[in-house]
Image 1 (spheres, helix red, strand yellow):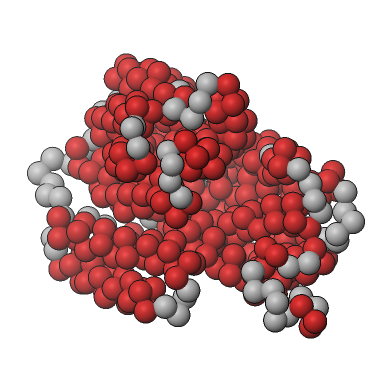
Image 2: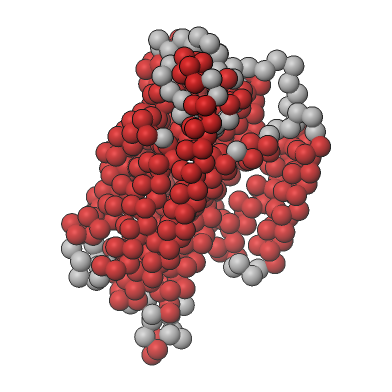
Length: 505
């Protein structure tokens, strides 16, 4: 945090409704998280009930993810311009209304259209939620508040498949959308009652050319990453989209450097804590995508039931939920970069253990314990890292910083699904016995031993990647220490009073 950032805080801020704000924003966090996991569980049912095929039904999730990702930074910028309360409230109402429309959709085409509308509402919640929490809490409690937000994300991940299964089996697939409506409406009312208007910047102009260039570039990248897995990475369509992304992104940067009021303030990346925080977050979420290969090992490799696999995978978000509040609390006292570095180290060790100890005869309980450290590492990393990123920017840029954090989550997982999936498939096929090499071209059809070996190899690569990420974390800790020392030397008494007992991020 720079001295300018420290003094950008107002002298007196009302924190009396901070817990009301956290509960309110938490409803949006929970809603957005549970919605994604519920819909994923419903896809096979939707194929049957809507008389469609898998490539078409994929767009129920792909269209949603695409629209959310493309709009995140624009919504963050909008929140900084006009205040965060109204966009967030409108987003919740739009999300609830679109959820009702999804539940009434007469066919798959209309369902995809309504999911796009739902995504527009979700983009405001994802982009501005972290910023609203950051403004509502004093710096000394920000990490703890963001840690509780991490628990709600884990709760949504845990509850989604369970609630989705119950609703689909007993009520029908439409209920998975209708369940959002009362939560969204109650949340919108609570936003009106408890969330302050927040910082706004009158006289600002929205950067439409920059927003269009960024939106088109991200759209090209997202489509390439999602459909490229089916087309092939050397396919002309995939390569064309990746080239379009690169050209449009260069155009976007050129626009931002020339406009007086850019949508994205690129000077934020001069702050080491901001740049390192986003970079490490992106790499962590790429690694998180390794979850997609675990079911292949458990089902094809070990022959476990889907129910058992679901219970095993629940260990991961449960580990995050247990550790996240403690990590946030510690970050308020020791500094966000220090605790997030610990999370990176734990994650690296966790992936290394999987690579070393994984075997076909491992028991379900032992496997659950084996993957738990990677969840603990993410739980240690995320809230402190978010706190460090949000604390590194001026208050008038909190919406944009929050949008960047959400963007790194989405993009990291998308890149990870494509990259980790391809890595696992390549390594699995490399372990297929020579006599079967020509007959097996799909990794999911490989012998159990090859699937296990491919997963072990993939985990070792991820361990190395997280180890390198930890080096970035060490650099971040050094910069954080330098900033704290600079803040303490520059009128320490004034800094202490303005931040109610903290000179850190």
